Amino acid sequence: MRAEMNGINEELVRLLESKNLKISSAESCTGGLFSALITDVSGASGVFDETIVTYANSAKMRELGVKAATLKRFGAVSHDVAYQMAEGICRRTGADIGVGITGLAGPTGGKTKKPVGTVYVGINIRGSIRVYHLLINGRRDQIREETCRFIFLKLLEEV
Image (cartoon, rainbow, N blue to C red):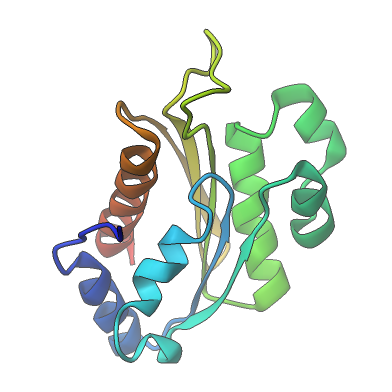
């Protein structure tokens, strides 16, 4: 079942259209849901450039330039990896806005320091990168949906 965004995905697409901006995403824990929600909107092809689902660490390194040392030191679910993902997707695509998403959607895989629901979102707007740390309670689908909802709302604020 597709997440209900109450029109914020359409609002973002229209805002990007009005500002002539392109967006790309690098997704891990959301598995393509963010890009699917954008492409649910008619006319998204005018603003959406590319998404890449880099679920494995090897894909993060190969496709986005995430450093092996960063993965080793901080782990895939970290501020630094989200930053490098947001940076890498813009470098790869030339988009004005790049989103990097990494986290633990569960239900397994959580640890004391990084429980299920830990998500890092990197947002790169023309080279200015901010990373947000989320801790979302709920089932796997709820964590993925709430992550996307957060990104849409944050982009509507910042673009």
